Length: 407
Image 1 (spheres, one colour):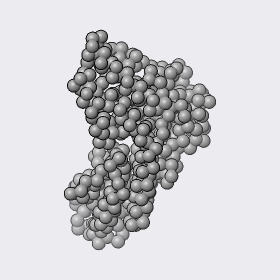
Image 2: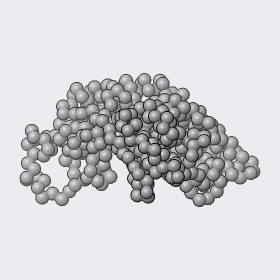
Image 3: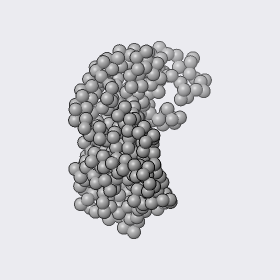
Image 4: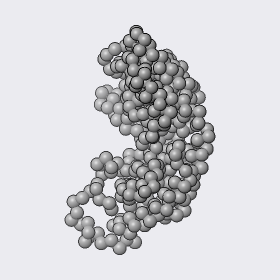
C-alpha cells in the first residue's frame, strides 16, 4: 500500500544528514562538555559549533541561544523567566486565544499566581488585530507572547508590527516560532522580538531538543531548574550534545533550502486546496487564504467528524491530523477553531494537511482519489447529514460509544 505522510506540523522525519552528525556525537564526541579532558573538549566544541549554527539561522548571537528539551520547555522558560523577574514592574501578560497549549496553559497558570492575563480574540482567519493589542497594553504590561504561525490553521501573524508596538511601550515580546522555523524567514532582528522559541523535530531534527532565543539585555530570570552552571546559568543540567548538534545541522539545512522549498511546497499546497474545494462539497478552508505557511492546508467538512476521516485515510496509507481534540479523549473541538468563530459541529469535522520535503503533486492526486469516496461514504452514514439515509433512532439511540465511533 502506498504511504503518504501529510502531518509535518506534528513531527518530521529526521534527515539522513542530521542522523549522521548525531551518531558521530553518540559514538565519537560523547564526552561531557563540562569536563576538562580531551573527550570533554570534543563535546564542548561540538556544542559551541551547534550554538553558532542555530544563532546564524535566526540572525542571533551564539550567546543568546539557550538549549532546551523542546518547544514546550522553551515557551515555559520564556514566559516564567520574564514574569518572575519583572514582577516589580507589573503583573500583566497578553497572549492570544489561538496559542499552543504550551503558551496558553503557562499563562493561565500564572493567572492563578497573581498575574493578570489578557487573551486577545482573533478574526475568522485566526489573525490577531494589532489594534486590539495596542488597546490591551497597560502600564502594568510586562510581556506579550503571540505565536509566529499557527500550528492548526497555518495563519502567519503580523509579529513585526506587534513587536514594534511592544518595544515602543517598553514591553517584552516573545513569539513561538516552532511552526514557522524552516518554512518562512525567521530573523529575530527583522521581527524585533526579545524571545523566540524553536523545536528540533519540526525541522527534520530529533525530538527532545529545542532552543530559546533571549535577546542580550532582556530582563529574564536565570535557570528555572536548580543544578549546575550549564548554559551560562540559564538552564541547569548536562547538555544533550547529540540532540543539540542535530538541531544545529537541521537549522543550517533549513535555512539553506528555505526559499526554494517554500516555492515548491506552495505549489503543492495550492493544488491541494484547489482540488479539495472543487471536488468536495460543503468544505471550508480554515486559516488565512494567503497569509499562511507554504506547506499548510486545513479544512472543516460539514456533516462528518475529523477522527472518522483520519481513521479512513489511515486505512489508505494517508497520514494527517485533526484540529479536533477528539483524538486526545476530549469531546471538545479545537480551541483555535472555536476562537475563529467556527461552530462546534463544524469544528469537529476538521483535518489538517501539512506537507514536507518528500511530498509531491502525485501525493495530492492520491489524496483526492481516496478522500472523495471517504467523504461520500461517511456523509451517507452520518446522522448529521440531512440527506443521509442512516437511521439514527435504530442505530445510535442507545449507543454508549463516543470517541471510538467511526461515524
